[in-house]
Amino acid sequence: MAANLMRAGYPVVGYDVLAARRRDHVRAGGRVARSAREVARASDVVICSLPSAAALRAVAEELCSRRPEGLRLPAGPRHGPRIVIETSTLPIAVKEEARRRLAAAGTILLDCPLSGTGAQARAGDVVVYASGLRTAYRTVTPVMEAFARAHYYVGPFGAGSKMKFVANLLVAIHNVAAAEAMVLAMKAGLDPAMTLEVIADGAGSSRMLQVRGPMMVRGDYSEAMITLSVWAKDMTIIGDFARQVGCPTPLFAATAPIYTAAVAMGREAEDTAAVCAVLEQMANHRRRKARGHRP
Image 1 (cartoon, rainbow, N blue to C red):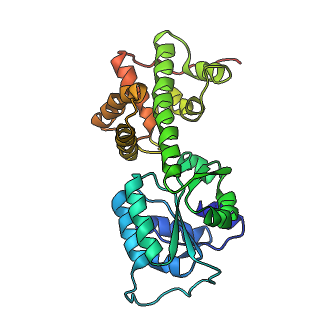
Image 2: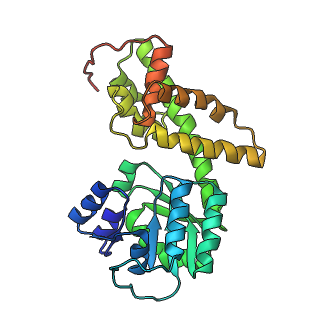
Image 3: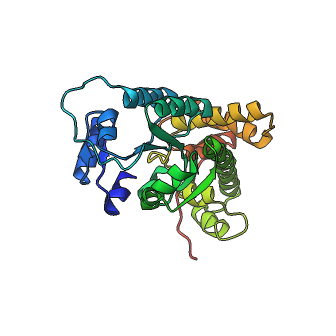
């Protein structure tokens, strides 16, 4: 997102707990802060992409803190309340807690989860599900347009997360469905590369088949768009939310053991497409040497 914002002409001040990410940001032409608070002091609009509820709580506390912390970046021009675009996939109650805390400090938090993988984010191919104060959403739409393919205002605060839970439920199911179909094809003696090309062009296609099918063809899940360990967090959030609203999700529930098995196999750092390896093992399938095919 930062790279796309800079390509659109925005100056970007960034912070990450990982030094490697900070170095990447500098190499891309960005400025690095020493903390999330320094980022906020230099910016009218802050974008958060965080891995856990604890991380959001820590950032909210830091943004609200008034304690001195040595050298700081100059404050950015203030044309109204600071707006925080919160793009993480987290429980709504945690985001609501952060929203209230930041509001007391004069900062507006928008709940804006993203639909798309890391690779899609790098290509500007994500979709924003924005929710919260509509006037604040309108203020930051130019920023969203700089890093996303599309953005939608879906309602009051929390509606964005609800929409993301629905989207990720489909991702969970479609990913396992794609893997199941690919394993059936391989078990039946079809060439996996040809199967992907043919099926992806017909009614049986899905975005997950298109995005993760190539990994399943190669049997290589090391370049993760989202790791199984991170996805386990999302699965838990979706399951808890569905139970809260009293909605049965039998297909989603059926996928959970497949993801759990992938983690148990030691694949937690691999992409979620590694569920294909689980299903291959269940099918007692051993891959043959890859063959080329003619279109």
